[in-house]
Image (cartoon, rainbow, N blue to C red; front, side, top):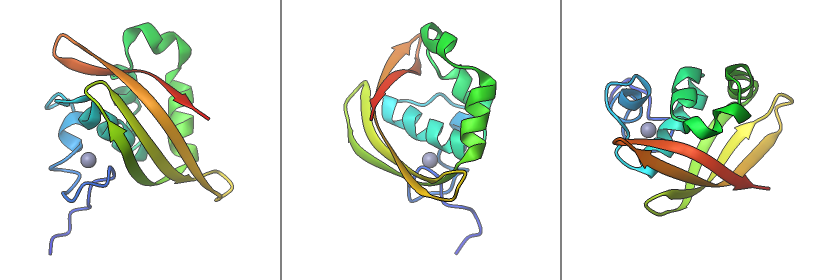
Length: 127
Ligand SMILES: [Zn+2]
């Protein structure tokens, strides 16, 4: 038994061995799926800078760090479920409790882009 928390993204290993090295900028997420998972963990840990830096530069005008931080903190991130993934897309469901402690599911089909060896979140379709 160890005292390390299992990673927020739902992998069987600890946050330290999983998404934290990406969130801390020690390593680059090697795939779009790894990036997506690490972004979920960044929401769970309120790592706004990581979310901002991994949003493709062409899309940043649609966001603000304040909005990202508010959305990250307003909700309690419960679970990530990956539905499917290709080289540059990920379909997932993020389960969370909202500000009123109601169960919510964010179901998104996200698109990613690799540039200069780094993966970026481009955009997503959701209901
Ligand atoms: Zn992880």
